[in-house]
Length: 236
Figure 1: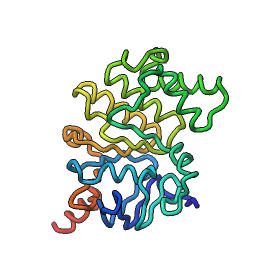
Figure 2: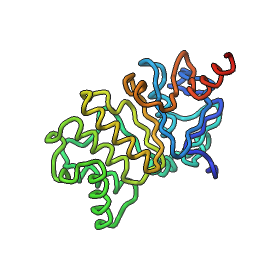
Figure 3: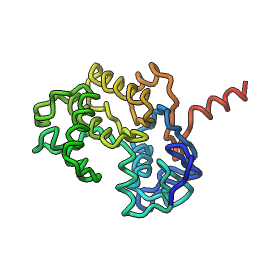
Figure 4: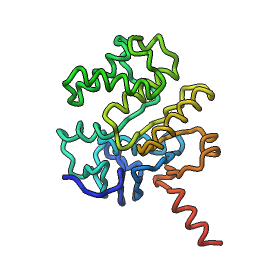
């Protein structure tokens, strides 16, 4: 079952579980189609579990939720690949096939998500590599690329199906500051072109430098900076 006319992410009184353990409770927030949102919190606070729930790697057992118009409460296993086609997922540890070229890594995802026309696949592969600044990297193996370049390949992979939102789990965590800054600016460019971004990060310099909305996982809850600012204003 799908919702219509919804924000790209909506959770209402959701409870996020790992197995039988509740990691986050009473989670309520939404992300609109053009938003850039930081997701922060200490290690073990529930950030990754929240992201996994959004891309249906963990089931939503309590509360209500929708992501890109898919109802997380009712989604069937056969529908999960269709949900993920509308998402871009970027991991900290790249998860590239090390025995395949950059092009073969991207072709693998396209085949897995229903692409069949080889000429269209090649055109799209070139488009996304150009978009992330790696136009000449198609024939290279991952080990021939720097860490920052590998992360750009991961972002290119995430963009293949023109996602409504990018979910990024510590995408700059293993990169030196200068490279990390370049990757972050790439996320900004993608966001400005209409793709929402939810980015988990420990990089407090980014939080200070860029005044985007913040969701903070803390003590089993998710605090929303928008709501926190409203509450603080009411106290004054």
